Length: 256
Image (cartoon, rainbow, N blue to C red):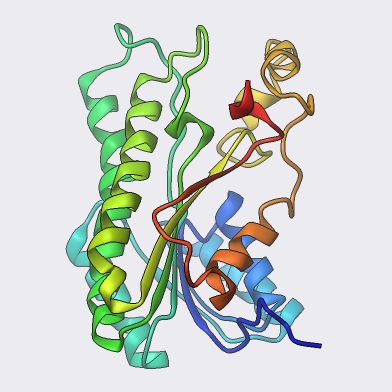
């Protein structure tokens, strides 16, 4: 039987590869035989995740300590991947931060920092990797957007988060158009709330349970593994005519 989602031996760079959804997607790819390059700032976490994935799935895993807000650092890390593997087939932009604070209470420094990580970081990594994908005339870029790329939330204080994730959606569309002639697809995944290091403080609070019941038809947060299918689809040639899309995996959240 044909495997429409075959990504074995592809080379994938994953930013934010030391925790959260980045690790979940890294493991999903590793389970399909993908060779990985993990980027994040915390070397101890990176090293532990890389060793765990290599041991569990038997694939090659490298890592590079990378601050996605530093373009020169991103370029250096991308070059290390090229030096080791010779190409990059897949880029997952998963690095990000969470921030919930009313607009009049957050500082200008908080606003600037958040946009730098969640939006500029996506652009920096896409630009650094995109140069090689254009040369090889092939590539799959997957950005982590959010349901908040499309919608806000009553009383949520998510002005900078919705701004950055809305920017990710629009950047995804623009790069998809710009790089379509080079056989590069650029898409975004829009998760609702998933359990992770970044979201733990929010979803573990007692105030969050009624929010989930009110906004999510399925009445729960996302479970580990529930992004695996869409990530593998967008990384594979099954999605060869799918580009510029934000696909929400949200239990129906953005349907109401």
